[in-house]
Length: 608
Image 1 (tube, helix red, strand yellow):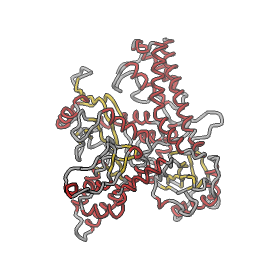
Image 2: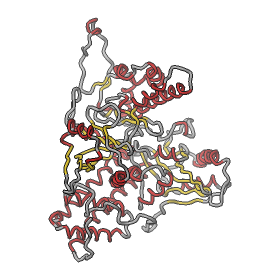
Image 3: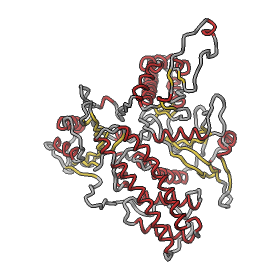
């Protein structure tokens, strides 16, 4: 590692650092404005505007990086400056971060702009922030009139109901509640059931983050109950009912409920945050098992999530010795997938060529992944991190994996000694990284291998595992349909099972919008020859879909077929798909519940 010069005597370096900071501040100002606007969109039920804002906000970062890069090149010829100047730029920039409220985000912005200007493709160099230079601990929002990161309430057993009402009132939603006192009573009943046998200690309090979390058609108050040495997270979903008034829909309680709310398979939240690191720290206290990078992602700060993921990944590599391998499961026709057994993610790169019947291109596949990034993933599509020019140590790769990449994706592979130190590196030109799940076909096979044909406890568990997985599989497809997504290839191998048993789709190369497809019933055979023919005798358009033809590919196993036909036979009917298609085309925006429907407080007329 080079030693930085200590003299900061270059006005040019300071001007470059200052211009870079201006670029970041503009980015976060626009990001925060769009996020803050979610409250008004929620209050006015502007669901299409909410969806549009979520899509557009994803593009903000790259646009601001391009703007900053262009300014630095135009005004300062930044790419032509000697490395001594760039060393000083970084030191000046660190000085500008000292009292900044988003220093970690500003460091990542510096990295993005600098690597574009200097064309440095690796993170481990002297000109970027490989490690954070400024602490994010105890940063306070010092803007005039700014709310604190969280509010603390100190109720007694007798005042808990009015505290819940006050807690919700403090968000100052400009739309009336149907009956907030009644809903607070529902919350109190649910809370009391959890705390019935618990003695309230002197420090009993409720802490709630000061901004609501907006996503889809919901707003969420997020906080925790502190009692003695125990801290229990909770969230209150606030929705519009059918009469257009607000209701508290459920009481989410405990880490598992919060993990579901902040799942990597859901769209990013809109949250107005002056100090994002303080929000992340609070959320980590609710979900200590959730990596910080995934929390930043959930808050819409995906570039910061990428930075933290990469740091965690490098740290893991330094403290492990296992090797990258071809990922277990059926190999894909389009994506080559590998993993590191000790690391809970998979690495996916696009192959250079695709056997028939696949008819696609690298750019089309990248477009599908971008669609998923920008779409509401409704808890059923895994989020991905996208990287270019990723360097790995050559000795961490199994030879079989290297051979596989050379065979199927040679354009994506470079092996060289770039640093001239005798240690070869594997450089992958472009890849996607996502959370590892158990492929659904393997999950089902494990259940069958355990045996389902007797009355033993193991067989009962295996049958339960199969039933649960098949029901979840159908639910996943129906959630995707409601979100205007046709998965395309619905084979079991293209779905995964998460730690909590949720089924998530992760093969995106054939997805389409439901509204772009034409769902048809297979025509009646014209004669006996048609009926007996092994070929399709009727015309099929490029986006024609025949749901009844799914069965032979999906339901060959009798046990699976029985469960599927009991719960999801409608997926084999064109009418099911057509009805959803018409609903979406009419402008309806579906409700997404990141919790089980059984948790909802009510079902009566007028409820959400």
